[in-house]
Length: 498
Image 1 (cartoon, rainbow, N blue to C red):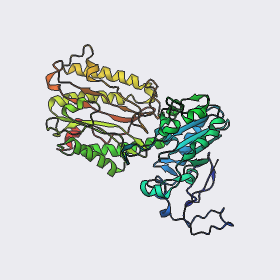
Image 2: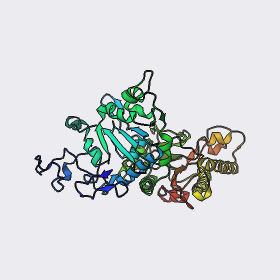
Image 3: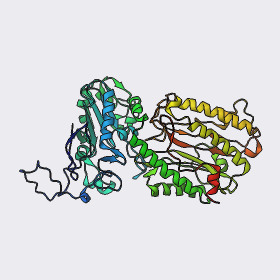
Image 4: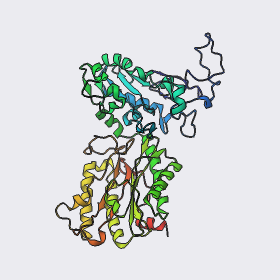
């Protein structure tokens, strides 16, 4: 496939194996150049103003403050997206196809919608960030470049765009997102039918495909898509894409490092202040994430004062913070479609009590030790790191006077020490924690202790919940901590308000 030239950069036409770049020329662009039949085939570059371009998401020509030349999304180039599709196609049998539906708009009530979040596998392979779309990748031969990329999406529609914002449209699918063919999603059945009919195997995850519910969703009666398959062999696409997504590229790691840096600084800034309400602290973090350069919060934050920290996913965030308590905050920002996950626990007053400090430092010692194992040379898996973490916490708690017999540790530390992180906060769902960690894997390390108000436990620790979490990129010999700007040493936390 040849990649077309950009209207503005007048880029040289290149093949997939050279520097793929977005090619931004829409048929609907206004132009002062003449458009009579004798010169319609000729491209006119200088006559198009960037101010006249309207896409469904930022591109370099319209948002140079967000994207560099050649990028489809912040930090990720058109070439990288093309390489991802090539790697996926290489895993397919000849004439096999992968079908990936985009996310749909989620409705809160009536005409009120939730903030749109793209289906992660679709986003990873296309960079396209609009709803109501389907991507198809078809293997056409034995070579790494022997595939075709189809992107079916909403067409330009002035009336709809007046209400809902710009759409990229079919021509942008070719010129910006480097599809070989595009088409109107309203005709998805007729567009997909010849591709399905000619396929040796179809790779799709039908549960995810329910986003185009009326067409793709399985149910008590066969969906139009199931009828189209007509007994054709189908395979799950998720395991293949999980393997591609699990090892992060340098660009992905850079995006996660940026998300971690911005988010970590916001945490440290928050620790400098005295807070009296959980919701105010939550609002401040969201504000600081975005002011720092993140596009959004990565997930609903946990801001848990006192005993609220005993609930792992406490998100009501509506209590008053008491000066004598700790506050546990689990939050993170998103940058360029990538996220990092941070948890910090600190004293509302700015100074730890003796009991709080003892328990906090016990968790911190174990967390540091577990982070140090996030390197390829250690030959560890997430499950093995979890086992090491359990042993460390058990020994530390014994030294603090806890009776660790029976199921004590299961009650005090009820969750796994880590998960994969990347495009999703729990990235590559289904990718096993038994996989040996390799350079490029990105994981969280988050030991915690949650002490119920129960006579089984030492009185001075009851009602305290502490979790310390960093996002970490595995390297050959040393871990790269992506969230190091969020301070976690006792002396550093207390110094912020001294």
